[in-house]
Image (cartoon, rainbow, N blue to C red; front, top):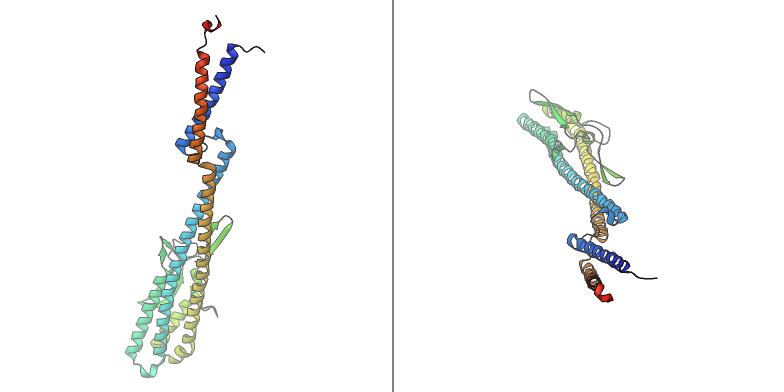
Length: 303
C-alpha cells in the first residue's frame, strides 16, 4: 500500500484532534472539579448523578420534617407538664376544700377563685402554638382549640374547636408518623368518658356550695384519673420523640452516604486527574512535534 502525503496529513490531524479533545476534556474536569460537565459526556453517569441529587434533596426534606416534628412534640410535652402541675395544684385545693369543717366561707371562695385561675392556666397551656400552629387542634392547626365558656365571670364549661384527627407527617419514603394533636383526648379522664368541662364545672359548684362529701369522695379520685390521662399522653409523646430521634440519626447517616456516593460519581480526584493531564500533555506535545516535522516536508525533500 502506497502512503501518500495526504494520508500522512490526515492521520496526523486525526491524532492531533483526538489528543487535543482529550486534553481539553481533562482541563474542563480540573477547572470544574466534575467528571462530567454536560449530558453528552456520559449520559448514564449524568442520569445517576441526577437521581442522587434528587434523593439528597428528598432526604433533606424528610430531615427538616423530622426536626420540625421533634420540636413540635417537645412543645407538647412542655405544655402537658404545665397542665399536670396545674391539676396537681387543683387536687391540693380540692383536698383543702374537702376539710370544710376547718375552713370558713371566705377561704372556700378563695380556693374557688384559685381553682378558676388554674383552669384558665390549663386552657392557656393547651392553646400553646408552635411556629404559628396550635399543637392540640388536630389537623386544624390554625384554629385555636380550646375556649372557656363563662357567664358573669364564672366558668361554666370548656369547648373544643379543633379536629379529632391527629396530624400525620412523612418522615421517610413510605413511612409516616401521627403526632398526637387531637386535643379532645385531654378532655377525657380515661375511665368513664366524663369530660373535663363537666368535671371542672362540678368542682367549682361543690366548692361554692361547700359539698365536702363530693369533693373528698368523687372529685379527688377523678382529678387523679385526669392527671393519669395527661401522664399517659406524655408517655405516648415521649415514645414518639424517641422514634423521631432514631429517625433523625438514620436520616443523617443516609444523607452522608448519599453525598459520598454523589461525590464518587461526580467529583474528580484532583491528584489522579492532574497526573492524567500531564501524561496527556506529553502525548499532545509529541503529536505537535511530529506534525511540525511533517509540515516541513516540501518539494525540495524529493529532489
